[in-house]
Amino acid sequence: MDARLPAHRCSHPPCRVERRSGVAFTLIELLVVIAVIAILAGLLLPALSRAKAQALTTACLNNLKQLQLCWNMYVHDHSDELPPNDFVYTPTGSPISNGVSWCPGITLFDTTTTNIERGLLFPYNRSTAIYHCPADRSTIVAPDGTKLPQLRTRSYNMNGTLACRSTSWVPIFTHYNQMAQPPPTKVFVLGEVHEDGIFDAHFGINFDFLGVLNDNWGDLPADRHNRGINLSFADGHVEHWKWLAPKKFIAWGQPAANDSDLRDLRRFQEGVRPSFE
Image (cartoon, rainbow, N blue to C red; front, side, top):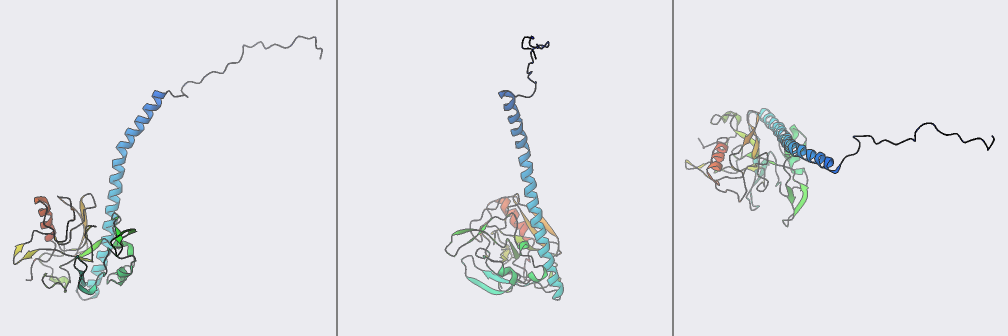
């Protein structure tokens, strides 16, 4: 090529890089987006929390349904006789009875499921998981009183007026056909005990003394399900009860805290055998 030839010149105007609109955000636009996301999260989180709580309640009810089915099968297999409920301790750790039970052991100290597996209901459903409410996050305690990170193995106790022969001062049902007042649809069998007060597997209940209604709780029921409790009943169904008053454990046999708590206690007392008659 002849170096004297003129260099080729582009007849087009110089190329320019054009900025595309809508790609970049200003600081104000970013802040607006973040604010919108925060508002949406604030609206959604309570709904998600309620959904999670409802799921835990449903899972707990399912556990009780399975245990109640075991109870009813035991009754059927033993000519109408109720499963014994004779493993009873005082709150100070003194045994009232180390007898045969639907589930022996002290859940506060149980590090394994051995006691559950010794229980009379276990042969009917060999899942140890159904003895524990998924919403119960309480942990076991070491012999020296130190709280350990391991979750407890059991959250439920059995109605103290059902086949507990070791507490002679409490009227009890020993056979299913005795349930007339109250009927099986009203007699609760298994329920959640307050995590600060649960000890043995016997749900202690104060009903009356010489015909006078007692205003004190025995064992305090739980209220971890949105201030409510789950219960199973002798006819096989389960229910979720909403309490009128929150349940705060102070001591075994504590008096009703107020009028609303007393109404809760009266409702609870309707599910036990009221007298020796």
